[in-house]
Image (cartoon, rainbow over all chains, first blue to last red; front, side):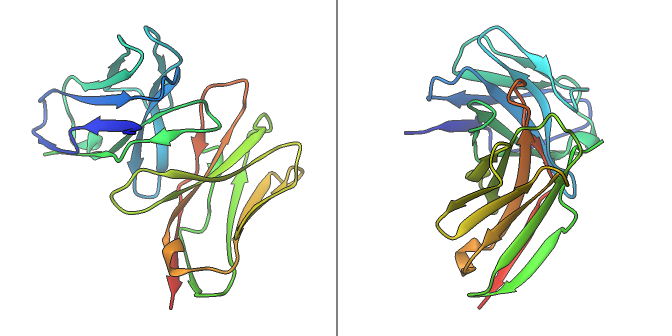
Length: 110
Length: 112
């Protein structure tokens, strides 16, 4: 049982480039989330979705876009990457009281 | 403004002794609290939770205590084992909402 799978696991970008992180879950969860983890800041919510076709902003949404075209997938896009977006990104799925996380995607923006 | 605060970035404890991790929150609407554990290069995994109708929840070596009046919770690990060395995140939610708010984490190191 795969749970929550994130791709890619690592990526290096140049400032201004774009990319998409893919999250896939096989637990039939309605809720999916994107967090970023930075030293001393813990996990901060970027965007979330409460069902297929829905998205909503979290604490730190600026510079990111998301889409939930299929229930099992939640995509996080960076249209024009900035060094401040260097971070480890975690996708999670499940109701708020029982989140399951992926292994993380480490993104470096030069 | 962080609504969940873990003021101790790190904790070092000897194997076999008690580890006590603390967490404070500011949002009085929070009614469900969780602890997550994270090893390097892995995603956080759920450890233990407590709802606001309780003041204590125990699961094996792990016990979470909730003091609603002080807006404070703590995680006790007894006895601490080397495999407990990890980052521990405190999290809270208002179950009428869809989101979890996380603290900054406490890195626990268990010394042999």
